[in-house]
Structures are given as C-alpha cells and as structure tokens.
Amino acid sequence: MSNNFKKTTILDIEFINTTNANFLAQIKSDSLARKNRFIVTANPEIVLFARQHLDYKKILSQADYVTPDGIGIIKGGAILGTPLPERITGFDTLTSLLEWANSHHKSIYLVGAAEPVIQKVVTKMDTDYPNINLVGFHNGYFKDDHEIVAKIKATQPDFVFVATGFPNQEAFIQRNRHVSDSIWMGVGGSFDVLAGNVNRAPQFWQDHHVEWLYRLFQEPTRFIRMLAIPHYLFLIYKEKFSRRKKKN
Ligand code: UDP
Image (cartoon, rainbow, N blue to C red; front, side, top):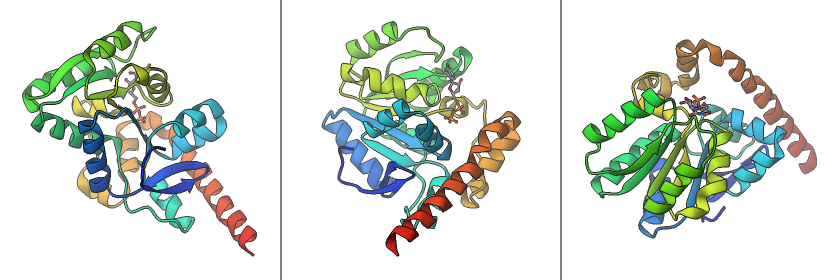
C-alpha cells in the first residue's frame, strides 16, 4: 500500500489504522495532487473471500488503502490486541467525498447498480450535489468494460465510484485504473442507499454495533452471507491463540 498510515493485519489483509478524518484528509490531498488511488472498504466477508480466492487477495494487496468497514473488523483488531480506532465505511466515505467534490467542483464517473437505481442516483446528483460535474454513468450490468472505460479515459474524472459489489468492483478497478489518474473506490450497495431503495441503519443501530442486524431485517436473504461472521470470528480466535503460542 502506497501510504504512510500505520497498518494492522487481520487474517493476512493489511488495513490502514487511522480515523475517518485523517483518511478523508489524505484522499482529498491525493485527489488535489491527481494521484491514482484505489480504495477498498473491507468487511469480514471480504476478508474470508480473499482467504479462499488468492487472485482476489492479490487485488487487495495492490489497493492503496484497505479500510475497516464492518464492526467485525474492529472487533477482530481488538481481539488480536491490535485495535483500530473506528470503522471507515464505504457509504460514509462516499457521501463525505461527494460533499467535498461538490464544494470543490470536482468531476465524477459512476458505475453500478440496476438501471432504475443509477437513474435515481443521477437525479439526486443534480439536486443534492449541483456543483459536481458528472462526466458519465452506467448501470452495473454490462458484458464488457469497453464503453465505460473509454468514457473514463476520455473524461479523466477526479473520482470513479464502482458499485457492482465485491469481488467484481475491485477486479474492475484493478483492471482499469491505469486509464485515468483518479481516486477509484468500490462502494458495494451504496447506490441503493443513495437512491432510497435500501435504508441505512439509523444512528442508534450504528452506535450500538448492530447495523448488520438492521440490514438483515431489510434484506433477509443476506442471512446466508452473514454466516460468514461466525466463521470469521473462529479464525480470529485461532489466529490469536497461534500468535500467543509463538510468543511463549
Ligand atoms: N450489482 C451490479 N452488477 C452486478 C451485480 C450486482 O451492479 O453484476 C450491484 C447490485 O445491484 C447492488 C450492488 O451491486 O447495487 C451490490 O450490493 P451489495 O449490498 O451486495 O454490496 P455490499 O455492500 O454488500 O458489498
């Protein structure tokens, strides 16, 4: 990772160990310097997936910043005795960067989500972020990257937000980031939230570390995906005890 943040390794994935404020300040300065940057916001599901898919793990190792999204990563850090200060979520980072992009007249390209969702997000850009220059957008259901990548190359946006879910969004970014010195970030289901199709958990749920439960109520089909959490915690404890053994 090309940055000076302290790192914390959780099950072989290197996370930046910093606050939202410091991270955002870094990204804004990267953007002003027109650095080519790749941000991954990773949760336990992503960490497990990377363990089982080495090609994906390699992509994560090429990202510039992997941030701790999801309370499971924060808990993991604490259990391993290498605490991380706070969650740095995809959605919060996206909205903070959109606000900054709006006040600094920056340009963005959006790709991801179903057509009606991206259409709603585009309308929202006009109303909520009128000073952002939206250079182009595309839904997340495409066969090849060509048209999208050509547009990004031609317009050189300050930010490229990719909302096609992991692992596709990270693979897309790694494959194409060379065409434009932009800040590239995978934002998962954030466009659905921006469009108002899925609600973000209210602050109370977030503060009490049960945002995941709120999400489960909204989308019960996520249950299967959430089975990853106990598996993840098992591996964290295993890691903790193997580290302790090595120490003794
Ligand atoms: N999606 C997409 N193209 C695909 C598959 C999914 O654009 O081929 C979109 C989907 O419509 C949704 C997002 O990717 O908006 C994935 O959301 P999810 O909540 O699964 O992502 P997470 O935040 O958990 O990574």
